[in-house]
Length: 590
Image 1 (cartoon, rainbow, N blue to C red):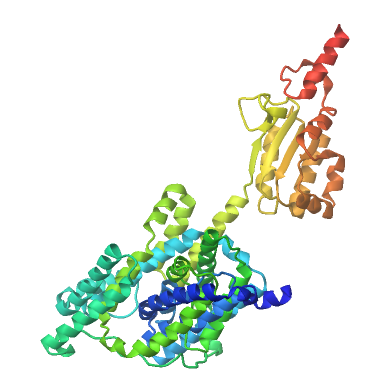
Image 2: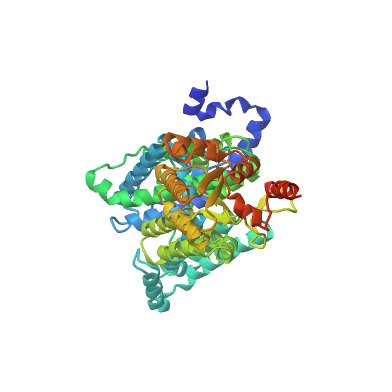
């Protein structure tokens, strides 16, 4: 049964589908379907796709991801990040909105799905743990500014060349200041401010839909009063096809695969990070456990299916997933309802898009862009960590001035480099017994005396090829600075594992200590570390009798090997054994 549940994870929650659960999930799904309506059109506009494709991306992919993912609240569909990376990648290859452009988008979606599915089947779900959250925050903030910049032509009704980096767009805009269309600008501004007003005064209302309605009505009145679109210049999106997602097929030619490969990798990295991060943040609230590998599989299957149902790249949506959770969704059926109900809504309201002006969409996208910038999180990153600030900064400015896929790769690469840098320098601190604590517990306190013959060192971090240089340097430094401390005891409770290089480093240090008339000891070795050292034969070289389970046994055993002539004149007396030895010595003297 467990085997079937892994193949079909929806078998886990199917038994829960009873009356009340279905009602709650239906209402949550209806809310999500209404919300995705304006968002889908907006995101398709960002992606350079015909508006209906943004709605299609919220249908079949949402259903497949809900059936085969592991999160009960994650809702998949079109997102800002995926849309803007898609536009950045494909706009140089084809005219946005053209059949060739759509074909490339479907091909990219198929490739992303394949990569996600392979990573999931290969149990690589932990990969996203190595991508810093600062990459997502920095990229999203940079993408938000780009979204707003690319909508300037629709917001002010001016002609501008498509594509280009931020500085190119700003330069073109200032050259066109004299051509600003006041009617178009009025519709965009009223749409923008009506959305802000509704969101502030009535936060539970669908502010995007209301703002779109306000802008559409205003544009209709202006066109009617001024003599039509030709007089005002207020262009509309145009009626959407009143159909369900039509069948489609990717164009998997070698040329397309080669040209789209970098974009596919970039979108996959960001999409999976976004989906798993959202799923985990919601699971922390709901108490559910997320399986990263299963989430990879669910996202992969959703994009594979989407490529054949006229959908471009879909991934977890923070807004819709958060709304789904707040609406009380209990099972993934809520996301399935959202996809199914969206199909019905599109069939009913698609013709009304003929009244939706591009200027109103620009105002909506200004709202979307502003909402994407997480000022609180950016401030927290800047205050708390220079390294994470660097990661966020590289991704942010890369998104503004480089190709977006390059910005993602740069941020991910820097975060990995910083992670490796941290793991390559495990924390190594001196420990001494504290006589004021029960059982003279070990502490790190430079004011307390150390044993003249024994150095106690705690290592927190794994011993692998990347960290060995730092560990060896520390060992060498200890021997040169304190040659009288010929014995070294390593508290190993913070060492999770050691590879062959790490084990050999411990063996070499043990040999050097032995050759110098001292000894090398391990205290509190974890089971996994013990197995690592045993499998490479390192434990035999160190000596199993020099590995102790706790500090009491360790100190008692190591004390027997210390030079008693030095102990006789020592005034530190930091171990219990020292006190006993001193009493025996005094008794003999008496």
